Amino acid sequence: MKEKKQGAKFWFLVWGLGIAGQICWNMENQWFNTFVYAKIAKDPTIISWMVAISAIATTISTFLFGCVSDRKGKRKIFIALGYILWGIFTIVFGLTQYMTDGSGNSTGSVLIVAGTAVVIADAIMSFFGSMGNDVGFNTWINDHMNDDNRGQLGGALATQPVIGTIAGTVLGGMLVGADDNYMRLFLVMGILVILFGIYCLFAMKDAPGLKESKRGSFGQQFFSIFNVKEYVKLKELVWVNWSLAVYFIAFNMYFTHLGNYMIYYLGFTADMMGYMEGIGLVLAMLAVIPSTKIINQGKIPGLCQVAVFLNCIGVGMLGLLVRPENVNTQTLWNPVLLLGIFVLGLGYMLFLQAITVWGKQLYPEDARGQFEGIRIVFFVLIPMIVAPMISNPIIMRSGKFVDSYGFTEYLPTHTLLIVGAVLVLLTLIPLAFAKKYYIKRK
Image (cartoon, rainbow, N blue to C red; front, side):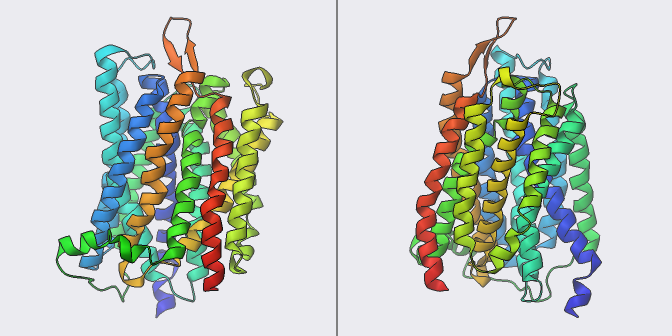
């Protein structure tokens, strides 16, 4: 019976929804930022506000719908509606470019109105994206997980962000093209996500054993997740989450601006940037395949530590060795740049794969939806609020340029990457504590 329910349709939903969602998140994390520079203004302050507000919206959505879905004992409706609305507001976000002349040099009242519209549209998109993907899809996966498919589903959840990053980077570059046609990207991705949401209405089924989980009133259950005394008892999970937060503070500090660094500082076109990143990340994905065996052997903490060092080396290479004068923007063959992206990606993929499996196996069974909310606090909210506080001043001080028309631009430079390479090493501190409790549990 279980095998029948987890046939081709089930796995199509697992991979289809997962990849579509991760490509859409990658688009928000990378291409939204280059869109702002290309169509609104070359000012990191807009990106900082956009990142922080969308993180807050994502977290509120995760806690709210996590609690509602647990109480109702339903996942399907939240996934379907979430994906449909996610796709609609992805397209709406792209329409903000028509509030300016599309040159990326907006000033005065036009800049204020367009910048505000971008921040609001991104926040709404993130709110429904979290409803459909973070709460609905991830919890639906956990509901179906058992001893027979744990490895396959765990591997899918860990691999999908990697594939999403690669596919989103390469396809995004192809769709945007050298002519900066961002609307084409937002239309394609918005329609794709909408279609998956509609498909879910007819093809998806909730787990047979899923039941309503009501613990008191809605308010009591919603705020129970903020019971710090109970949460800190799960010491291993606490330190895993802090490891996640510290790592992604450093990661979001530079990766959010990596596209603009390559396009506006190094001088690549958007499509060339996508290909460059894609090549390095594809090679990195192939290199991390053997890590699944290491995870199954119970060596997750050590793998996370190795991943941190690799990430530091990769980002450090870009910051120390790559400059506009030593890259060739007309060709893909830039060995140092490609190697830096490869090592950076290798560290990122290893860390994300290992920490995802590590954290999810520690969730209480009767509150999986709400514990996805806690994960989002450390994975999204804290990093995306703290990271811009670090990156924005660095860009404003080290990347101030005046273009040929007299407009002031603030571009991410190698300085940002050097700081990021140092900060990522701080992840080793909470990892050491998480490893201690991991060994104790085993």
